[in-house]
Figure: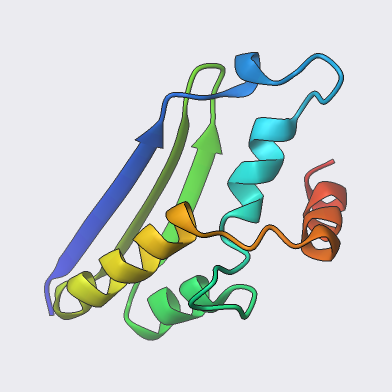
Length: 105
């Protein structure tokens, strides 16, 4: 199958972090892939991508945070639904964020 890709760029990056919480943007970048209201299992989006010849990544710069992925084109529509849910209804569970915080330090 042919491949497809999607990306979402937010105009918030590390320069927008509050001085008392440096690294907040980067932590949230990681936290958004940890599940959402529809797919509560941590890493379910990554598993879905992997099962369908895909992968994802993200980065936080000073002014932007960008999320992107590739997937088999026949799964693009479902992936867009899952991706939009991650971005609009993330769980951001404290215990998972703490684990990510340690991973990115």
